[in-house]
Length: 241
Length: 241
Image 1 (cartoon, rainbow over the protein chains, first blue to last red):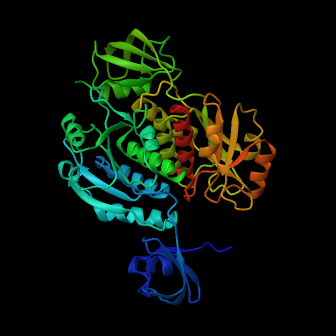
Image 2: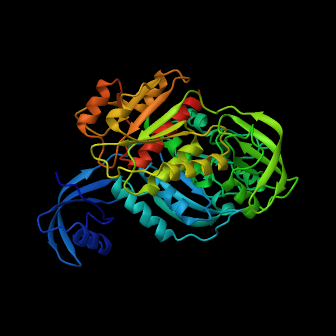
Image 3: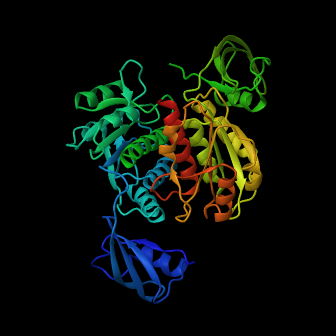
């Protein structure tokens, strides 16, 4: 049995040629030829079955033979806003895993105790696109630019908003239990801080903006593990309803 | 505030000197001196508060001032047996994250479709020890040697045993739901296959041995992500009871 090949083609419904990078992969690595079958993911909920019309060293033309609308396996939107870690590979790893598990948006925060204040959004997006193809997700998660914490918390976000923190002096509940109280169709946004946590001021500011302070359980988690744990809790509660 | 320093010292109750590698870290990196306070993790459920008596370039002597018995934050044992991935960093990453989340045993399987048939247990253990210290886990997970799949499934394992697989033709239930039916104190062992999955024969053999076939949800997960997802599901159900 030949492995089914998936490509990420945001404009799959209107164009008839793979994007440059996807074409290079299709032709040079997978050695696709005329008449080979491929699948296209548009990242907006539709897979397309297509047939290769022409493949040379730079181009891969196709025509769509079937439109296959897909369903997300979880309900509502799952959004994570996180302070990027000092070592960027840790956040990129998390972006890959959160995509495999299933979520809808990844946003980056610049916080009081941030050890990293720049992030290459294009690199994260590359990792996420690879994971979308590998795990065959019909929807491409939205990837935001790095934003100041104070700006992000004032965005008009739909649904329920949570901020994870580790301070004993600021009361908090368990996200895993909070999720039981929500309708599974509700959108959820969780904020996760940098290695040194959010500052107390940031937590209080977010609470004043309507964010609920939460814990991710009794384990002491690294930033990227906390981010993935939050995504996984949301996905489980919104998948198995 | 000075960061609290944790060291992994399996014989903390009987010896008065840090193991060589821990001593090097204590003295050269953390620059500990006489009278500094340190914490020791014995990996068997006890933390020790200790004070440095002497620190030179090779040795770090201490005396214990307080014995602090700890509780695990989840009930029963959580055990994962997994086929190591071709790229070993993926399995090492998973070992780190599973340790942070919290589990009790990691075992390695040699399967019909395994892409890797050797593993350096000592390297995995190093990663796990670092994560135990970083996430301050009182118990060190057990790390097994690589075993043939057929031998592992015949081990006299306590508790509930599950095998994750992706075959449509072999019926399966959802691990996340199965866990609801168990007593939280019950031990759980989950098997996760290599990149190419277990073979149908392996799945059938495990079922014949009493393993329950399960799915880890609708997402298509890489081996290491599947392993972590299994650990996280078990930990959530056994932590929040």
